Image (tube, rainbow, N blue to C red; front, top):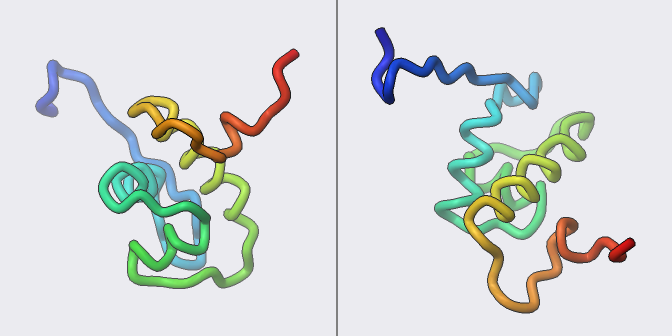
Length: 84
């Protein structure tokens, strides 16, 4: 049985070229504070290959930043969208 209250945390590969998981991207965002998908690759010791995962990595970054709270004046995609 997995730890953490019995919840099973599945990891999804978001970059097949570098075999990066969503968990690795979230960890990099919350520990190293990269500002771009390219910086996430660098934090994880690799570089962009085909680029198909860049939008997914950006989305994960935005979700992770909203979860921990961005600093005042942050220009991440979650805060740069016009208010409806």
